[in-house]
Image (cartoon, one colour):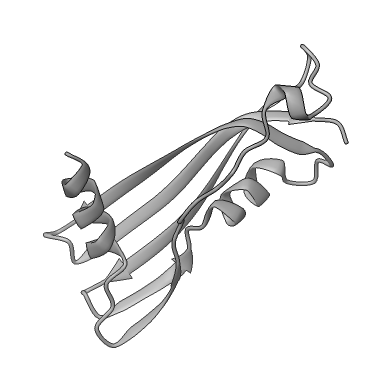
Length: 110
């Protein structure tokens, strides 16, 4: 199953004529003990995507940094206890694909 996800993610980032994408590699999240965690800290979610069309063009920023930036929005804080998933959608035999990095976590006040 793991290899199928990696293969799907690889297909989503394939552009034979043009490729300009960022993909997630690794992300270290803070733990509740490392920040000033409070029981009323809000939970936020964010998403960042790469897209590919007709196997020729690939673009987007599906990195962890972009997903965390989307999750924080205009909030000033530190995300902790972060969970990440990658979701790949392929349409018409992979002629159009979208691979999204989705993160969720809690935000501590700085």
